[in-house]
Image (tube, rainbow, N blue to C red; front, side):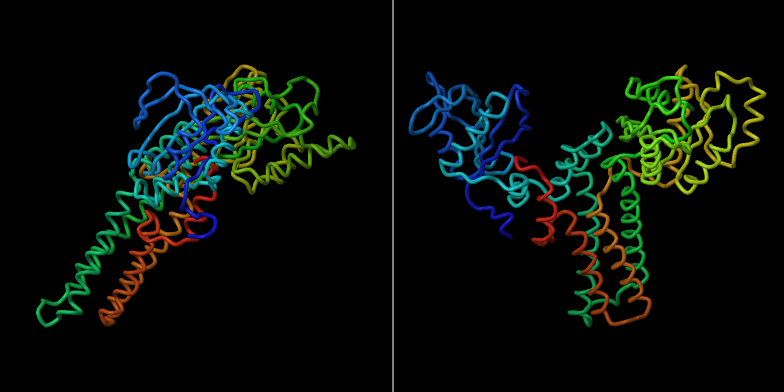
Length: 464
């Protein structure tokens, strides 16, 4: 392994978020062959408590030389192989905050452990056979989940729902490879290969790979979320729309145009998908330097967003200002939000619709009356589905690394088909078939390189 993951020895790290003067518990985790001896040096138990695996002991952490009391704590013992890393693991459950856990960590390092690298606990779990790579990545996704659906998808990966079909596909490829190699070695003793049957089997494998690849966009949405920018002229109700949608008072709402001078952000969840909503400053020509900066930021936010909600005032109709903003954002995925419909009659709505450009998604809302929010969310989900983000299997959502490996496997299988159809020698069939097998193995870790491990585990936090 690289220096980043020199996995020998005993490692220690703070395994919980450390926030000054907040949090009731802080955990220091130690893994390796010296974990128990370090615990016995630092942890003192009153009474006749038994030091056995999967027990929690109560006691005190003291400095081994001065016997100074560091903290009153609990000690959790997990002996190999029944632990996260399949090594001896101990955890010091200290009082929360900064000082206690940092002092305990320092004592662990002075007693023979070294500071863990990012992701090294999970790396050891992988190297010791407790997890495959898809499960390890599921842990990272679970820690970073921004919505219940993202957490459920991460748990599905952690439970092996992605690894199982990948292993089956790889096993099918290995079966085909074995059949071809047997034909090469024992051609005189075997019946000729059925080319059509092999091509049919490869097509089935490629179809399953395509099904898994279809979950990539959904995975990206669940991990990174959808960025939505609310844009429009001043005083059309953008801030009111944000407040009604988020059910809060994140943005200041007044009758004065130009109240919002900067981008206001709110985090929402729509059908399990995290949504970052940006309420932007009203866009108009202005000589006010501060407001001009706000307008520039609004346009930048719109151009960087995944979806734009162009909001207009129904009572004012489709104005020249609305048209100018529309020309600036029409190249982006767009929903036209016609707000303040409580101020107009039905016949005025019809007249307004005839003047509005041919935008597919038009939603009528009254933010002040909390009307139209459900319709807005429905339109957002429809746009996501129209963009083929909706996955065939809602339990699975692959990441970019897994998608790249699946794509390579699919390309290799297509090359195998072309080789067979060109009636090239059997040796040529095996070359690309081995490439597909290797690509599938990289997903679960059966075939893995040092650089892949570095890339995956360096993204973890130090204590995981």
